Length: 239
Ligand code: ZN
Image (cartoon, rainbow, N blue to C red; front, side, top):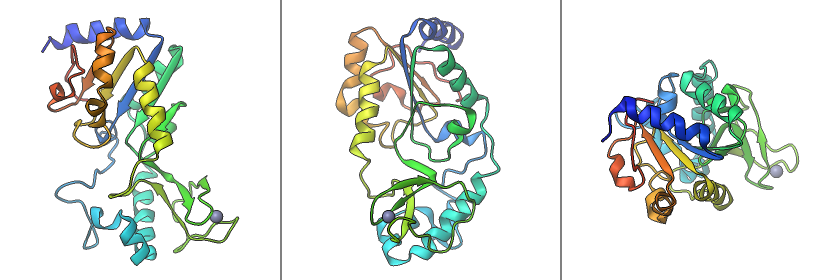
């Protein structure tokens, strides 16, 4: 591993030379804003584990309970602010010709920080989707009704987030792949690389192709970053 200072200087140079920068962010970038991850110990709401509520099965069994859980999450996230990590990415986007922010986070903090070109792999806590007509709408209210319904067709609304056991939206995934293949600099921030879809990066082999083209990947806050096979000169530090 190269020295952090050298790595950062090198990264900055590459950054300002790049025509298209793609960034993948995960929970790590939001942790400093106080966003809980709901993984591991302490990931409990009432007596339920988050992983047992954020599923299509839980929603069809008891949509009221799942909505109560999501209203609680909205309540937790609403007062939180983006941190310097989020703002730094907005700053980069303002200065780079083309910038794609791919995020696994659903908290909306990148939007709050002013990021514009965002690919939301796991959806967004502040969006709802109709279970009938599939329409997606933004709804910033902290508390939605017990069982919110679609204004167009009257069907039940669900959170527009990807639940455990669900596939990522192929169109969203395509946008991510496209950006990864097209960019000349990729940064990975605040993700362990083990959570899907960070892990897809090596499955597709795209980062390897990118490295052949002389591109650069900076893994920040990544454990076992070498597993990616993409971090030619990885910079490991906290997000
Ligand atoms: Zn509808």
